[in-house]
Length: 218
Ligand code: CA
Image (cartoon, rainbow, N blue to C red; front, side, top):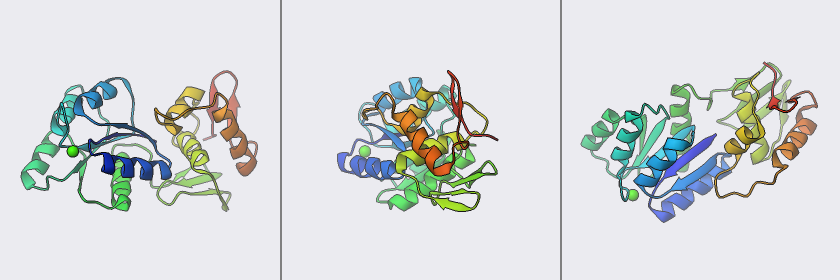
């Protein structure tokens, strides 16, 4: 799951970005509205966390710009402006939900999962292909009923595959879902994670499609 965090407040941004990484999201963080619009024009995200008070272009302009281009990405507005008026303006501009500052990370994460789910993403409730079951909310993974313990990156990679059983994801598809921009990615990082996942889940749990990528069976 890849998140664009749009937040100019350094302290809030650092806390949120860190918490999201710990929850196995890949996070890209931008600090003004214009950069957010530029980024959203070229990159695909599972959800956008959008502050309203931003330099260059404010959050509502970002939202209108996005929706004006029919970009359907789920947007969760994070705002200190807790007036009814702003809420209505935000919803008219295409926000999916709100979190008011100050907020608890658990609430933010729960609302993120909810907006992703409502938009037909994969943040829950539970992903399963009959053999492996993955719960994005509790981060529990089971194989034929046995609980499997995964690292954060292993979990992210498996979640990307389990989101669409039967679909082939390439190395770059997987890297995009596991790593944020500023993270260094080893050229064989994906292969290594596949290797450790197969050790834990069984060799047949993840299939290699030669020259194309990997998939889990339907
Ligand atoms: Ca702000």
